[in-house]
Image (cartoon, rainbow, N blue to C red; front, side, top):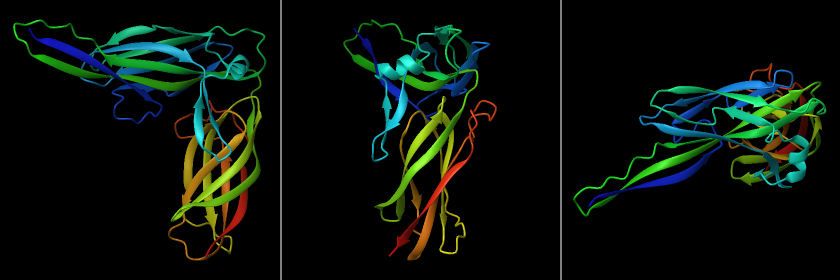
Length: 277
């Protein structure tokens, strides 16, 4: 008798560029207007075997501690009551199988109340994929083999925009630390203004004592849901001892999201001095 044991390992994917995610999703941030209440995204099976797909929705957001360390929050019922669309949104189809190379358009409908206040509301789309389960084989041998598969959970964003939407960043305080040899750690205490999350980019610029910008920028794309502390590093290993300044710039611009989808805000920046001994 030969038994084939199928082992399934769960992997949660929050980044779109992970090699394990052989099933891809486009777009990774979806924006729906309150007037239409409809949106779509595509699931593509880039693997060489059939994949079972399921769609679910959760409410969550990223937050930071006082030291700027980022973490995910999924159990905040108070914030969910104010901002979540998890209970309003439905996917069609919700469960399906994709053959190798096949793609499926998933249609989303948000049944939001008409009297919801102006602002941006959101949820996380959890798209789970796993190889189609094979049948158990019974043969005339005592050998036991195991087949290992991956259950991939890809978590992406869906946002509902209602009426007049606004966002922005106010930098209340900024400071620096020497995180490690050759790196400058910059921390900024920030207030997120308006009625919508800030989806944009944050860039660090370093200037010399003559206020000339040096060619050592540090750039990230991010989403800021609430007030907090942002931490970012810039490489200063090439700098000689002396006096410098570092500027942190918040801008509603991202390479992975159309400017038409982003809630626009004025560019915000702050500069502080630092020195290298």
